[in-house]
Length: 359
Image 1 (tube, rainbow, N blue to C red):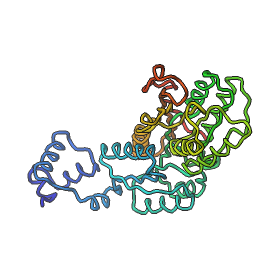
Image 2 (cartoon, rainbow, N blue to C red):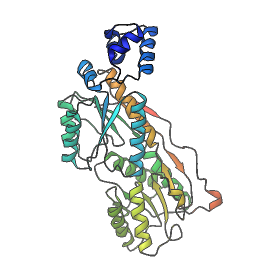
Image 3 (cartoon, rainbow, N blue to C red):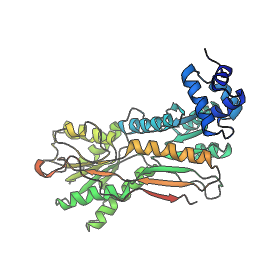
Image 4 (cartoon, rainbow, N blue to C red):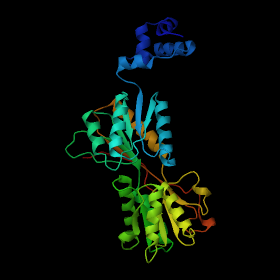
């Protein structure tokens, strides 16, 4: 097995120069750096990452804490994070907090104890302990998908990235009201999550824009998972007057809602129209095909890596919050005939936005 000394001899440089190239601890002239890299490639030298971390105080690893990894949306986020990390020479350590605040803080601590250079976290609905731990230990962190507000008196700020939520749901509502629906229910996600709060805001905005009153009985919570959404949909169907259309807050809840409708012998869109937040690979295979909002999940993951690497390079820069646009995917579950529904509509929400994070 080739050693660093072998690389130095082959490249005609000192061992120290090889170390500087590998660890990026000092600028090296481009032609010298290339000679070292060529020698590494020709000799098949594999750096000792443990030894390198002792020299640089960096492990070139990122901790990722994301719940519901089996959810296709989060699976694609993980793929985006992994691709972004590998592109920049970082490895990934993944943990599932199970949307439990206590477990969340514990797994983040375990990742931190593995000496990751920074964290990417999709926080729970109650991230108080998580925020405290990250702030006390000054861990470079990016929150993704679910955004948080740091305490007003905290000097620590977090970079964040997520999709637009309000306008895309308002667009789904506008589409349904444009089709004549006046009694529209919503199966919302887990209370306390920013995504839930914002999508409810989009639902209410859509009602207001159509001149329709808000009826609290038509808003139910499906806890962002299938079983709870099935029960919540059942509650809507127990009302004396049913909604004529439904909006679901994520893909897992869409499955639960469809199951509840099927068990009652109801047909979409003949009995109830349905629009979903979250598109997924098999949404086009359902009968009817699901009209949905598609999130840029892989790009959210990749953007989180870029934000984290920027933070590692410039620890004192202002925190940033990045929002990415969604796409309206028009199919047939909304009640539109097949020939008027496009499977791949262009994004209709505002473009990518980036704003400073304010207290």
